[in-house]
Length: 269
Image (cartoon, rainbow, N blue to C red; front, top):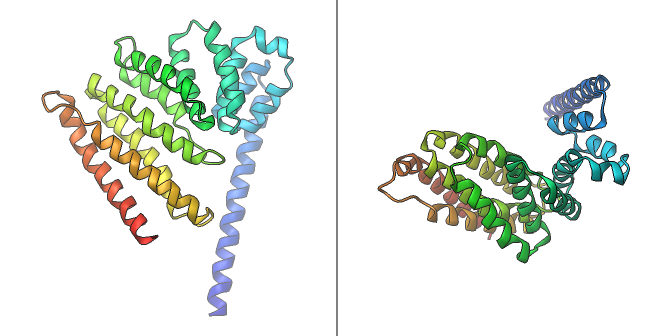
C-alpha cells in the first residue's frame, strides 16, 4: 500500500512540475515576444491575447490618465482586462467612457456585452435593461454575419469564476438569448453557436464537482445553472423556421445538462 502511495505522489509531483514548467515557458515566451513590440498599446494587446491579464494591467497602470483619455484603444483593452481581473467598477467606468467616443459598431457590441456582464456583477438593475435592448438590436439586425457576432460574444463569455462566479451564470442566462437569435438569423452558423453555448455550461458544470469550492457555494451554483437551463429550453424557435431543425439537437443536449444538474442537486440535499 505504501509503495502504491509513493508511486501516486511521485506521478502527482511530476504532473505538477510539468504544468509549472509549461506555464513558465509560456510566460517567458510571451515576455520575450513583448520585447519586440514598440508601443505599450501593442504590448497590452499581446498580453490580452495570451490571457496574461495581470501583465497587461501592470502596463496599463503605468500610463498617465491623460494618455489613456487620448487613446481609445487603452480604454477598449482596459474593459477586457478589468473584467478578467474581477474589477467590475473599473470595467464599467472604462466601458462607459469607451462608448461615448467609439465609432466602431463591432467594438461597441463587444464592450456593451462586457458592460452588461459587469452590471450583473455589481447588480446594477437600471443599467441592465438599457444595455440588453441595445445588444439585441445589433444581434437581430442584418449588419453583421452570425460568425462575426459569435466572435464578439466569445470575449464576454470568457469566465474566470473567481469573485463573481454566480453573477457570471446570471449573465450567461441572459446572453444565451443572443446565441438563439444568431441561430434563428443565420442557421448555417448553428453548430458553432451551439458549441459556444454548451462549452459555457460545461465550464460551470465542472465546478459542481470541484471540492476546492465550498459545498454551499456549489449548491447555489447548481440552482442558478438549473434556472439558466430552464430558460434556455424556453427559448426554442418556432417549428416553421429553418433554424428549428438546428436547435432540435441543442434542446436535447440542454435537457441532458439539466438532468445531470438535477441529479447533482438531489444527491447533495
